[in-house]
Image (tube, rainbow, N blue to C red):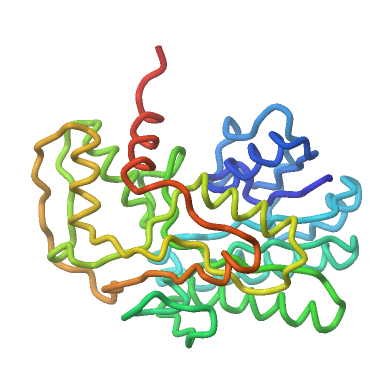
Length: 303
């Protein structure tokens, strides 16, 4: 099958592209390379340097794509607060462009949404039918994208599935982004620097390995499911516990530097993955320790 992957030169996208190629699909990557890296795109994939805020109809039609995996996004919550117009133009207008191209081509859409930024605080693992209370323009834009998917499905029958990811980590993650705490910790430890923890470190997240996320994406792509699915582990890990795992993997006894808590930061975010298990047969396979070890290994110099 011929598949378009928007954001395919980025962190998650490049892993999805590799998984698709490994099973024999023809893959076209759409990425403006503002965050993505050309070297992340395998030579077997076709790269189109293109901004998703511009129409995608021609690319999708000429490729003969039967599906679009939409991963291109402005993914930094802090940027969305500082620049909500930019965030909305990429995350809302870009999604509408993808849906319009998919409608014209009769293609299925797999949309990368978000868990923590949509649900808000979670006393228990959040389920897909729980209230959505985004605390940032980023979360609001992703929720709007889900709304557009539903509207296009009702108007035109465009098949789609939205995946609400937990905190994805793994090789190729940007160590300078807000969401990349695993990459940030490992990068600082690699350099011999001191890691920073904001507040007391009790804030917790659902960390899911990028290889598992790629598997979930392919499972959703191949299914007939038109739904919203959480993609996470169901386990909340505190920042302090995560740091201890990183330090153990690295073999470091460095102590972190505690700084003032950041205003508005979620205390707890964790996802219930039961629906994904039932609907597409997805369960995460990679433990946090194994995933952190694989990420650390990817940072080592070659040779």
